[in-house]
Amino acid sequence: MSESKLREEICLLAKSMFDRGLTGGSTGNISARTEDGGLLVSPTGTSFGRLDPARLSRFDANGVLIGGDAPTKEMPLHSAFYETRSTAGAVVHLHSCHSVAWSMMPDVDEDNFLPPLTPYSIMKLGKVKLLPFFMPGDPAMGEAVRGLAGKRSAVMLANHGPVVAGKDIESACNAIEELEDTARLAILMRGYDARMLSPEQVQTVVTKFNVEWD
Image (cartoon, rainbow, N blue to C red):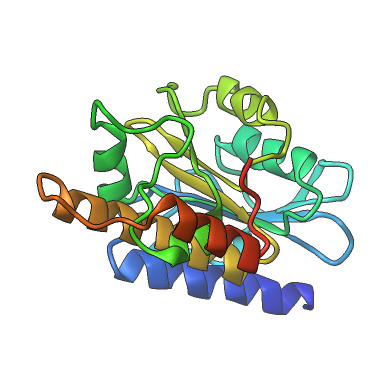
C-alpha cells in the first residue's frame, strides 16, 4: 500500500472507531508500518475523529522522527510490539469502555483475559494478557510487552485499555473491535450461568485456524 493511501486508511479507520464510541475525546493511538520499514503514528493529544493524514508522525526505519507532529506518548507500547512480533504491521490502542470495565473485575483470568464466549475472539486475538495498571505514558508498559517475548498479539492494560497488533491496519482494528465486543458480552452475561465454549471446542478453533495459544 502506498504511503498516501496508508495515511488515508489510518484516519478513516480511526474516525470509524471514534464515531461508534470505541474511544472518545483525545484518547487512543494508532500506528502502521510503511513500505520502507518506517512508521506512521497518530500524534499526541489528537482525536481519532479528527486525524489529519498530512500531520501523522512519520518515523524512518531506524525509529527517527522525520516528519509530522510529535507522536503519542504511548510510543513505548507500539515500539515493543514491533520489536517483538515480526508479523506486526500495525498497532492500535483504545480506551474502549467495556474492555476497561471487564479489566476491573476481581476474578478475571490475567493470562486469558477474555472468556471463551464465541470463536471469533479466539480466532482474531488468541489469548489476551491482562497487564497491571501503569501510569499513562510510563515506559514500563513497553517493557511489560517485551517481557511477553512476542507470544501475544493483544494485551489489556488494567483500568486503561486494550492494545492489539495485527498484520496490517485493517486486521488490527478488526481484532481490537472483537476484543471490545467480547468484553461487552462478558459483562452482559455476568451473573448468568452462560454456556461458554468447552475446552474441546476452544481447542478445535485453535487447531482449525492455527491460533497462537501459548
